[in-house]
Length: 124
Image (cartoon, rainbow, N blue to C red; front, side, top):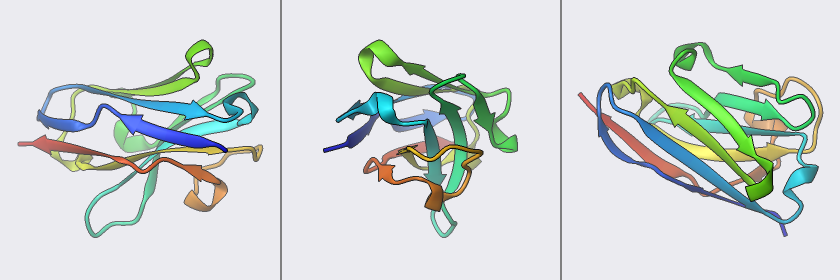
C-alpha cells in the first residue's frame, strides 16, 4: 500500500526558511512525478512544485520561483521542499502528492496519492 507522510511544517517569521520532507513507502520508484501542493484557508488547493522521476525535470508556480527548491532522494525514498524567504502568503497546509501519469501534471486531479498534509504558518 502506497503511503506518503509529510513532515517539517511549523511557524516561522517572514523571511525565514523551512524544509518540508515527504517520506514514501510502497513502490515509490514507480511514481513518474511527485509534487507539493498547498491549500490556504478559503482557497483552492494549488500546485507549488513538482519533479519527475526520469529526467528530474522541475516545475514551480510563479509565486515561489527563486525561493523554493524541490528535490528527491531516491536512496531514502524521500522528497523535500526547501522554502526560503517565506512570506505570510505562503501560509497554508502543504501536501505531498504522487502520480504514475506522464505529462505536465499541475492539477489536483492528476495525482492519485496524497499525504495528510503539514501546516506552514508564516508570521509577519
